[in-house]
Length: 335
Image (cartoon, rainbow, N blue to C red; front, side, top):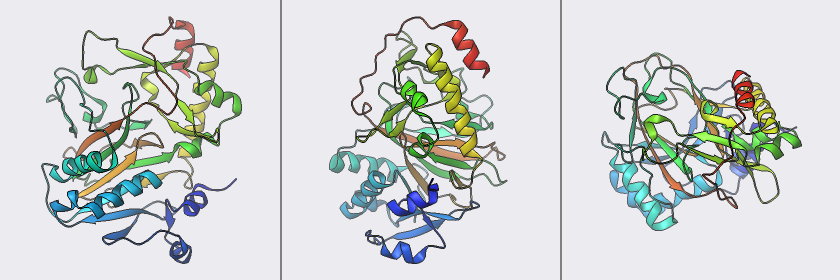
């Protein structure tokens, strides 16, 4: 089986530092403002890094086109700002430009009290949603997940702007390809994960309408046009399987995640050195899972935005679901 590095090298997604000649042969132009971002993983790789010297780049057609192209091709992109932007004006204007010129839908609000942007930083009492602490407001690790798995529909992209990186070695962002994960699941597991047999709860801090149903029902995986698993939504602590087949598939999915997370050729780890202040990482929320290890700096501060919320291709989620088998749910939760 091909390694992740080989697969992504062939597609022009992530490039090994030691593969300069194959990189030169790729049919992808080196755009103005492009710099390779060398990551600190055991298997050194690079991610496309675009430079935005001025705020005006958020509206420059060539720059916006490059951002849209990289997101479509690779699903992951770093942007380095050449100016201070504590108010995230560049990111807001960039998304408006993607909306106007590339049909990206505008961002979704995070909750009933928060709009487009959410501050990802530790807090013991000053929560962004009254009386409810979000996982991102803790210093705890955040296992593999996709953002807004509970949304109807979930956003296609999210971005994190680094305002203050973790100065003490924690808060590393890790990413894993959904397609790569799918290669390690058997046919029966894939089929079960592609059925609408999972209840996904809405975390209290992200409830927008207290009178609305507090969960959705749907599938965790969606196949591409060739039948291969390509898109995912997942966050273990809010997913409940409906029935024994779904419960068994969920257990096998978690085992595969643990297995791949331990392999250097299957995950990409972005440390504070890779994402210093002034960096923005943009990720396709359906093609890449992400995780965060424990935060060690109480002053670590990122700003998040999520946009382009469209249904999974060929899938209409339903908010209706039959009663959950509590025995199955409890068994799955203990797995």
